[in-house]
Length: 488
Image (cartoon, rainbow, N blue to C red):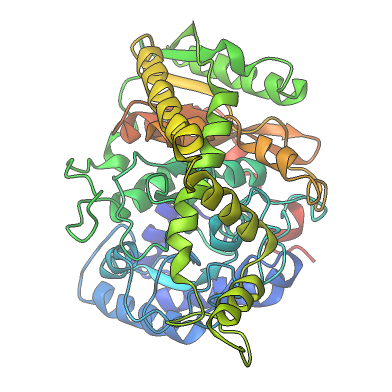
């Protein structure tokens, strides 16, 4: 069952081939017996999962049918879940029990989905490798010597290893798309405001966005439909109607223009990755789409702007973790300053501390206009260039990352090189646009992802393009050998 599509799992539940409890037990057993190899989960919730599965079975027995009713999934450990610990991958939160549910969790619970646990992540979503977790690094199921990507690396690895058919993620600068690409699954970051951020612990509030991760675009469409929608408790939540993403997967693609940025296929992109993406673009042309060359000259500018804006917002958002109200508190503080200094230096990891310092500096008197103000102006320019490019095409196609997944520890002592892994994804967040990663092949045994970007609130089109591409290829169906059913 772990290798079945969401549609097949729904059919099995509907015709009572197996129960929701049996399905949950199957996946819980996979996590219990195999996750030690990759460390994708921080918290597993078997008691809560089986209770939710029993409730789903009762609803199914009463004749209720739903796209996610009885389907297991995992949350990135950044979504608050009442009574279940929420850590953000940080010692700062440790065993903190959220007193309320994130809107995304409430919606998935109402849909009857069965939460199996909370997945590992870079601390407070800061990282591109999932090595910045207080609970240990996550390994890539395709190659245990490689990173799974970050910050949603636990979710990506859990889906790739088929520990869950679906998982949530969040994306501030590429944290859904990059791990999806590295782990050979599909992941979508919707338009900013499409998914409520209420109960999603903030890193950079103007950039963070929740999204869906699954093997296929079809499965992502079902999960995203349940996650999306207006939330009056989130002031940035959009009132745009949510289409039936699964119902529009077969919309016509003939005549659509696929824009290929000239600047993204230069010396900075690994030639083998570029070759896989070029082959995938040729498949889009075979579907009737027309290739056009476009200009997106802002990748390096976007990287610089992001690493001022996001740390500045993080500096503000994470100031609440001070050892006083909640979270980690140092032992035997000598005075208030000692309490603040030691609680934050002991509770936060190195990367989080680095970004807080950068952000605080950028916001400080005398530097605000020179750094933060200029970065905001660059952000507007980037958005304008995307608007111009999307006036010439319907979908933009390009790389997710310059390389395939790199080795664990390869960039740990070189943050600047690590930051370059997000050079193609960060501009999308600055513009607030939707984008997804779709698997398009392998370099050796490590997967390659192609990024598809669209105008605001065109997730249905992106999912349709990815879905119809996946009808012509089988990369999304590939499973790491060590995690196939019956593997020793």
